[in-house]
Length: 324
Ligand code: PEP
Ligand code: MG
Image (cartoon, rainbow, N blue to C red):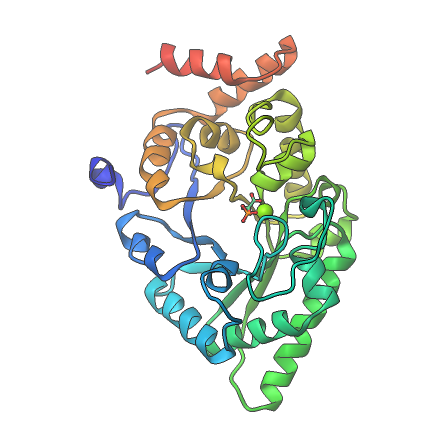
């Protein structure tokens, strides 16, 4: 399938009305690295660091992790890599950590909540990331931030680790960019200072949609019940876009929907201009995005909203069919 799109692999993704959209890839394992060149990705928009923890039967050592992260940065050759700190709990259970029995794991002690309560593992991971960067620029993203204070606490942890590394004589990156995932509706309503201080925001559509519709992403019975192109959800995304635009905060989307061409087109039309997806989706998404005018897709979406359509999928599909 990647061959089918090889003619546009090196092309910048620009819509028919001249809007530039950045296409990045999601990764997490060493096996993903060759895709950085074969897919035409502009970088890694989401590196799921927990995968390295999940494929082992004991806690990885700092030196091991540093080696892995260094190889990722080497493979990227200067392209941006967004390392997301450990996102465990809920569906991602580490076999070597005592499981906590929770009635609702998706709403439970997971991701940054674990990291802030028991900071040992995240500190070790941050050290490994800093050592792997070895002076190169580093981009970090915290998962599952639900309120401003969780962001400031996580950032303070990072600053502590940086100071300690410097004291130990390790070179720390001149520039560490710090962003967060937006996966809980609450964060969209965070105080203005959150959007002013955070350096970028990436919408985790898988979790965000789960919490927005109260529909378990693991439950086959309900997970496809609500369309991502539902008017309510798109209106909510529009609010996030507006908040980020007001504070000039770069915004991306890294859930699975970013890799579905029609969804990607609508996300771009709503103003989300960086999409991160599985590598195999980059060709099909780019191909569709380059064929259409985002302003017209936006009009189709707004018209469907105005008519009170529950989902804009039908109207958008009709438009694509009539204008192919
Ligand atoms: C998401 O929630 O959309 C996301 C990208 O993170 P994960 O799928 O790893 O939870
Ligand atoms: Mg998530």
